[in-house]
Structure formats: C-alpha cells, structure tokens
Image 1 (spheres, protein in one colour):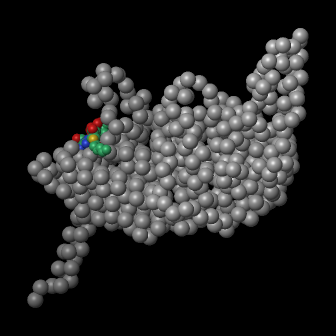
Image 2 (tube, helix red, strand yellow):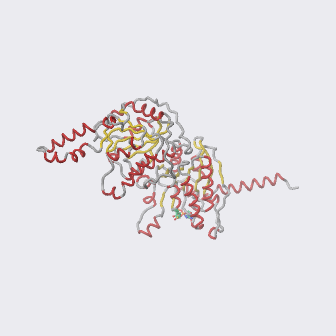
Image 3 (spheres, protein in one colour):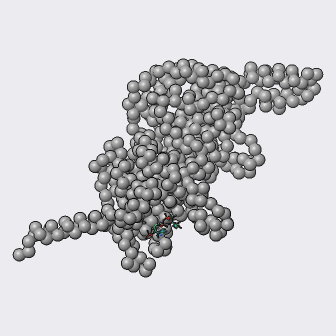
Length: 520
Ligand code: HXC
C-alpha cells in the first residue's frame, strides 16, 4: 500500500516548486537589473497597486507557445503575471508584464493569459489595468506573436466603452506593446523609466539617419506634452501606481454603473466670494481657470487629465456635492484659451470618455474662438474642431455649461452651447456672447463709416462702444433663451450642485444606428 499522505505531500511539493520557479521570473540577476534601473518587478508592482491580500492569480503554469526558435528556452510565467484583486475594495483585473522574462515580449500564450483576464473583466463588468513593460512582439515566435497582439487589440476595441481600461507604462514599450495601451481609456507613464515608440532609435537611425535618444523619442515628457499619447505621468513606479488608484476613484466599474460617490464635509451651499477677485470684468485680464474650478468643486480637489498637453483647454475630474463630474474648461492663461487642433482632440476624447462612463459634464467657457493661422487650417482644424462639436452633441450624460466671461463665434458652439445639446446654460454677469469681440466686429461692420469719418479713431471707438453695449453682455443671449439664467458668482457652487441633482436621472435616447461616424 503506497503512503497516500506521502504521495500528496510530493504532489504539493511539486506544485510549490513549480510555483516558486514561476514567481522567480527571469531570476535574481534580472530582478536586480530592474531595481538598478529604478523599476519594480512585475509582482512588486501588483503588490503596490492592489489592496493587501486581495490578489488571486490565474494561468500561473502557462508555458510558451513553442516553435523552432523557442526550443530549450524557458519562460517562467510566460513573461506576464495575470489575475484579479481590489482597489479600495472594488474588483479590478490586472496583467503585469515581466521584463525579466524575455524582455516581457509577447508570445501566443502570453497573449492568451492577457485575453483571459480581459474576458473575465468584461463578463464581470470590472476595469482592466495593464502594467506594461515589454519589448513588443516576441521575435522568436513570428506570426504567432503578431496574432497574440491581434487578439488583445481586438478586445481593447470591443470592450472599449463597456469597462474602463487603464494602461500604466513602466518600462520600454515598443511595437505592439504601445498599440494596446493606445486603444485604452487612459495611458499613464513613469517619468525617466518608461518609453513608448513604434520603432526604436536604432531602426530610426538606419531608416531616416536621425539620431535620437530613447527619452527624446518616446519618454514621458514627450508623450505628456507633445504627442498627447499619455494622459498622466508619475515620478517612478510607485507614484504612477498611486495615480492609477486615484484615477480609478473617478470611474464606474462599467458602463451600466455610475462612479462611486465621495462623502465630503464641504457644504453644498458654500459661497465662493473669492471668485469675485479672480474673474474681473476687464476682458483683457487673464485669470487662472484652475482657481475657478478649485473654488467651485468639493475640497478644492481637481484631478486634471493631460495637464501639460494643449494647456489652452483644461479637462479633468472633480466632485460636486460628493458626485463625480468631468470638467472641460478654457484656460485664458494659455494662448488666451483659444481652441486649436490639440485642444479640440483633447476635449473631444475626454467628453467621450465621460459619456461612456456616465460622468456628467460641466463646461466652463471663456473663449474668443478657434486659433487663426495657416498652419492650423492646413493641419485640419476643421476636421479636429468638428470632433468637439460631435462629441458634445453625441453625449447623453447631464451637460451643464457656465459662461464665465467671453464666448465668441464657433467656439461658443464648440463649448457646449444650448443648441449643441447642453441641458442647462448659465452665465455670470461678466459674460459676453457674440459672434466676435467688439474691436474686430466694429472694424468689419463699420469699416466704410470709419474710413469716411473725419476722425476715424473717434468713430471707431464709438462703434466699438456701441457694439459692446449691444452684445458684450449675457442678456441678449439670455433674452432669446440661449442662456437659462445669469447667476451670482458667489452662489455658483450651490446652483451647479442643485442643477446636477436635477439632471441625475436624465434619460435621453438617440435614433437607431450601428454607431455614429465621428470625424477622425
Ligand atoms: C524576444 C526580446 C525582445 C523581443 C528583447 N528581448 N526584445 N526577446 N523578443 N522583441 C530580450 C533580450 O534578448 C534580452 O534577453 C531581454 O529581452 C532584455 O532585452 P535587452 O535588450 O537586454 O534590454 P534593454 O537593453 O533594456 O532594451 C530593451 C529594448 C530592446 C529597448 C526593448 O530590447 C529592444 O529594442 N527590443 C526590440 C524591440 C522590438 O523591436 N520589438 C518588436 C517590435 S515589432 P536576455 O535573455 O538577455 O535577458 C512588434 C510588432 C507588433 O511589436 C506590431 C503590431 C502593430
């Protein structure tokens, strides 16, 4: 009779030995290299991201997909750690690429591990978080690795808008390793240790003869400021993972739910007299829209998205009376808050993200128009500006607009005017709604009179005043119903919270379609 207990012990020991081998990944030397490079290992990242004790791992014993070039190659855990855990008690699914195993490269079975948890996330209605640190398609596996990427991209696309997908870029990510993050809702990078590019410096050098470093080509600085590929950057892994946790607090679990509420002791009816000193009537005096936002929202907490890209428009999340709102606001401090191509793209994307995830939108308007210029016209400001118009009109979440100062021309429409679908439009007494500023308008409309005048300067000044008196105020628009009310600056927080409360159960249908055709 064999000793059953001994047999069981051997089986358990084998399982533990196999698991330990997987947990060791590419071994202590490569783990040391990660640490020396200022990075955590794949498993350390999971520990930092999730609530302690919440991790359940899957596909631990998956092996690589074989092929002639993979004979004799070991890939413990297949270069990626996958499973589920919780963040502030809410379930999330996570894959964490293990750079110590074949550079975190993606083979067929590595992709299968990732797609399994993506499918589970979709079925259970939970966010997916990807911790990316990968050299891209595993060269030895050829078309199988390309197919693996295809399966992930496909799911990124079909689950888009159904569940939140967040990508943290925590190492060099090349080729396919950047397109999956690009298909997700938010991309966060780690300053100094992460890079994103389709082809690296060596390939670029051989093709275009350009000399460029990793950082100059695709570091966090580039992608959060110039390309707009990344939404946020942290200082190292720990800070970036902290940002992921913070971001998640503004998102629902899935498209059928609302974001979680956050209790606050900040009174709903708190007056905001400090704004009287911020927004002065002189249209030429810029002010910080950040100050306006922080005065109005709960606990002065604004979680800004893409803070360094297209700074002429601000987007981000905050709470009003404990409930999440997405904020889109012109920033008069930068390029006078005009709308250009990057600002239009940034706002349109954010509006659609809010609409996917049942986040009401507050739009704060102080804008003179779209940015004039040959470069903008030739680069397609018409096509890009149209995205903003489209995104606002398409969105069915509650939409409230507040005109703080000027709102002119096409930008008046692009910033969610009543006709573009705003549910309620407010204006401050400092607001002015017109086709353009008084100076420009007088020059065009009264050009002949000014030219013919004995004193052109005086006539011009008189015409400007006349135009200003007529249009540079909120009352013409309010008289025609384009503005629902002109409100006291210091009472705005209360009014906004009550308005969003009124709209809480808004239900707006759209005509049947497969999907709309947003200009791209
Ligand atoms: C398999 C790879 C690999 C790859 C690196 N490794 N890239 N293994 N497939 N694509 C292995 C290395 O052999 C090494 O193994 C380990 O990973 C670490 O790589 P190093 O080069 O030593 O690291 P480092 O110096 O930090 O450089 C990282 C890197 C570089 C910048 C990412 O490895 C690199 O440029 N790799 C190639 C990137 C690339 O071209 N990928 C294919 C993209 S095409 P050992 O055993 O020594 O630890 C693609 C197609 C999909 O993705 C497109 C879909 C649209």
